[in-house]
Length: 145
Length: 145
DNA sequence: CCTTGACCTCAAGTTCACTTGAACTGGCAG
DNA sequence: CTGCCAGTTCAAGTGAACTTGAGGTCAAGG
Image 1 (cartoon, rainbow over the protein chains, first blue to last red):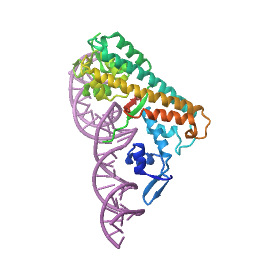
Image 2 (cartoon, protein in one colour; image 1 turned 90 degrees about the vertical axis):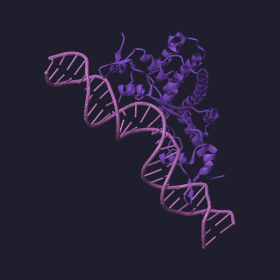
Image 3 (spheres, rainbow over the protein chains, first blue to last red; image 1 turned 180 degrees about the vertical axis):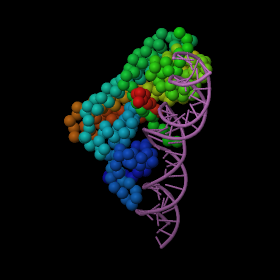
Image 4 (cartoon, chains in turn cyan, red, green, purple; image 1 turned 120 degrees about the vertical axis):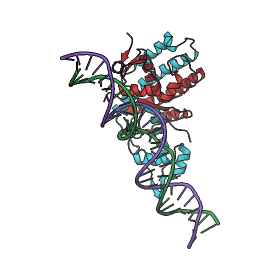
């Protein structure tokens, strides 16, 4: 089952055709050929897109993702950078945990102002502690308009 | 020690003066008065900024943050929304954990292509599982240029 | 009193990640 | 053969979150 077309990739991946063209232009994915003008994709592009989505959701820019996972999808990976990114994620995760705890607490705390609640202030400090080497960018995917 | 000036807020918080003005315009922080043209801030703005930074780092938009933590810094909080946001964060954290594990693994895995590594594919699937209700936006703070 | 320089306003510019619009093309159903 | 229309290109637009630049103001030091 070679060669799926852009509409099908969009359907299967949930990524819009316009985005797929954009990603191809950026070199994040590649179409395998053309039928007339129409791009033909290898089904493997779906794995690639899952990887991209995961990276995006984890706070990496498209450029970073491109650098992390080779331009053609194969090996060429900087292991040191991967480890660095993993450490970065660790710090992000720690901050997110603090934020989540803070939110959960705020949802039930009876203090008049959260700033007057020692628990909340402690969480804030804990979260702020991970300040150095903050994350840089991450967006949720837009739901189909 | 009332009334600190914008340069000091910037210094103490690490947030640029231009950003502070921008935040004020957006209603995320408030200056407490003026000396001539110059804004005077209450030291409490620093807590507020820590909260904003935390929220941003956790993937919330400035608008969401504004809605989450009252316009003036006091109570007015929708507990249901806070809980919802906390759940959202939980899902994000789970995905981030998967991503981090994936990166760590990729950094040591000898498979020629990560897609051929069963461990990596498993992580990818695990991460993809949390797809519904994805995060929307989060940026790392720019370091001082 | 006069200069200086930090701060002010307001408009426009920047980056990222896409989306939209206009104009065109070509495989395929009828 | 002839349209249809999903797909194409290319340029421009969008929204979020800031930053930059031009030109103006004013409190404080000399």
